[in-house]
Image (cartoon, rainbow, N blue to C red):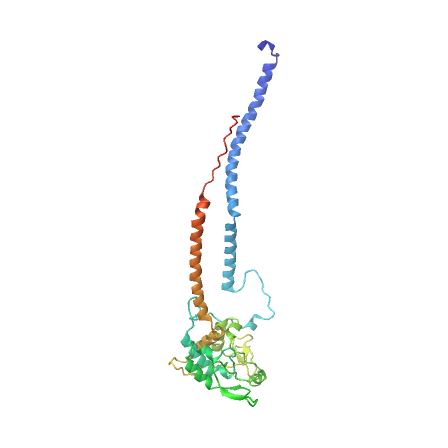
Length: 335
């Protein structure tokens, strides 16, 4: 066999082996490099999957939105974003402070004794100019007065009714179903009695004004002398909390103006607090019932949520944790 090989066959085999050995070394080096790169790529893939996960994106979005909302709540404006106003900021009035109203909490109700005193302030002071068109005498029953007290107050007012059998209108004492009377018969009479200014209806005044109860309280107690350089026309009054600073309504609350039935000292701030509480109730008479219903709803839905979580884990736990194994059929042909 060896005699049949050509003379240069061994030399060719040795040269081929030498050429093949560098390729083997390079393949071993590439294999080690491949293992190192695969470990680095796995860590980078894990980081990319974490950054691209929905939970990470949702958390980042919630954090950003919460930060912006908290900044806007503290300072009122967003940074690096200008504001365009059609009027000067001083025309909007001084922003009222936030007062600790006893009904502001999630589980707090109105102070009904304060509502009763506030109605007394409205009746003896505010009702001379302002109406309360959306409140009937029956709305006071069970809130600030008894049925007999509300009926007695209603009967003190004469209401036009009719027509009678002769086709004529007549006057009758008020009933619980009647709404509280307005101080003026129409808008023109109201403007004529207030130098052209129209006193607003107070039924929804707390909801209709920016700042709500804080604004009404600050307005009633915020009358001061105009600062230097500010001129107020005759017949107007300066109040920094009113837009523009000048309003037709003069200061109406003074210490001792009202004598409360329960003996509470009738200071200016106390009367303002009571009448604002009454107006807040008038704007939202369902306030207490809404909070009681909300507490019941929270308890009910929390219980249903806990039951649904338990049922989901009980029903789906075995299904999601089971292992499915596939055994291929054996080859019966023997090949």
